[in-house]
Image 1 (tube, helix red, strand yellow):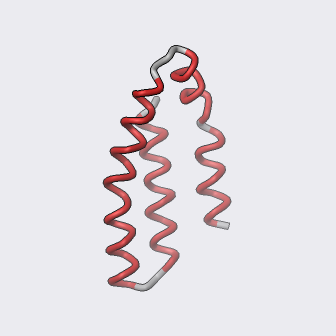
Image 2 (tube, one colour; image 1 turned 45 degrees about the horizontal axis):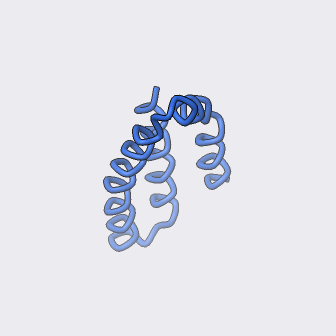
Image 3 (cartoon, one colour; image 1 turned 90 degrees about the horizontal axis):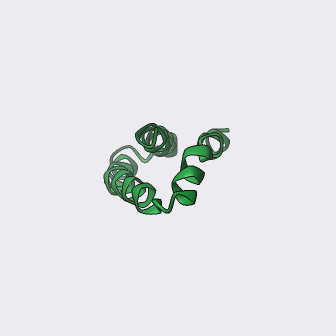
Length: 73
């Protein structure tokens, strides 16, 4: 269920990503995606090592997707 939520968050906010692509500003989306990924990945790794709980890993991924989509707005 959490994987579905994570996927649907990105799906519902593709309009801004598409507009950036059309206006040839894909670099903005790429920069935001890279920054969020660089911040979330160490958090996910740490959460898995410390807690060994996959649900926390997924919550961090969902939070990263929300932050990424909010940053593009």
